[in-house]
Amino acid sequence: MSEFHQEGYITTIHGFYELFDPEEHLVRLEEKLEKFSRQMCISLLLPSLYDEIHVPEVLDNIIDQINRVDYLCSVVVALGGAKEEKEFREAKEYFGRLKKEGRDVKVVWVEGPRIGQVFKKLEEQKIPTGVPGKGQSVWITLGYLFASAVSDVIALHDCDIVTYDRLLLGRLIEPTANPNNDFEFCKGYYARISPTEMAMKGRTTRLFVAPFAEALARIMDDRSHQMLEQFFRYHRTFRYPLAGEFSFLARLGRAINIAYDWGLEVSTLSEVYNRLTPKKIAQIDLCKNYEHKHQELSEKNAGSGLHRMVVDIAKFYLNYVRSHGMAIDDSFIDMLQHTYYSTAISFVKSYSDDAESNDLIYDRHYEELTVRYFRDSIVTAWEQASQEKEGTQIPSWNRVVYSAPDIYGDLLAAVEKDNE
Image (cartoon, rainbow, N blue to C red; front, side, top):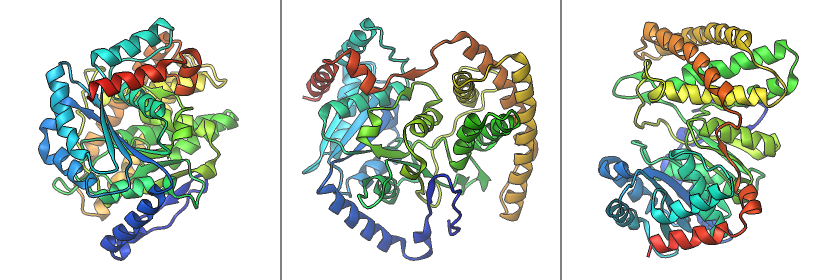
């Protein structure tokens, strides 16, 4: 993107390289990262489902691209969905292609019996570990990385990126690995336009998270709750808050709680907000366009698809409001629904105008229907949140080690044994 606008709260790192020679930019970028890697260990965490290894047209390219870089000291795969040992062995062999001189590769079998014993020990100590899913897989795998005590910078991205190339990886890591700046956390962002459908994607961000955070910011401003208004303005600063790509310093990662549900991304942004000053936070334009698998709307099923995603995200935000000094009741939820709906409808008009000027296909009627579904999901989120007293965050590893000081040793032994 050729614009250079700064929101003024966190730093936005734009994609100016697109105006010149992207290949030359990639060469210089990787030279810098290789130089940085001589003084620090840069690790990559890949959350992957077992089924994703059977989509070789996507994952094969990701592995091939990663294998063309020399600045990673370790790659750790958080493997979910592998129920049997033969499935784990298959995945371990598949990801073993990432091994090369100077790079360690491990696969964390999240549902394996050895990691299961680690979970059991934590539960006996009354430490919540969440439920199976991406958040829990990321959390336990971060525990292994912290137990290994070698990583200085950790990057994370998903394994379903159709348009993946190593430029995305390098740009994701550079802001936090670069010793010449102060960034401790960097969030990726990108365009979400389908080149085949000629249409905007990213419905949950466009039609829910952005207008929902905007609505809450306006409500907090009207009620003179400056702390919560600033919190929601911070979330509005991110151009793609639900992006699954981010990098961070390991010392920060040890201190943050991890949400185990679809609130993972907004929860992570909130944890960063609570622990860092804005000058240590950045977002970076990773690539020209980004394509991955899409979730179904599932308007009649609150347990799947975008319906569940919206409920989990709304639930996190509502819990945050309650835990920071503002009571919520049914009248507040009714007002929030109306404020969100009017805000989202104005967003839809803006998206429609944007699409019109760029010759994109845009179904404004369907987008408005989607906003209605999302509006109704706020009630579902409130019903669930009002019954839950502790939220959906798993404690930080700093907190876990305080209560279970031997847990790092247990994790190391489990992962090393599985990977023999």
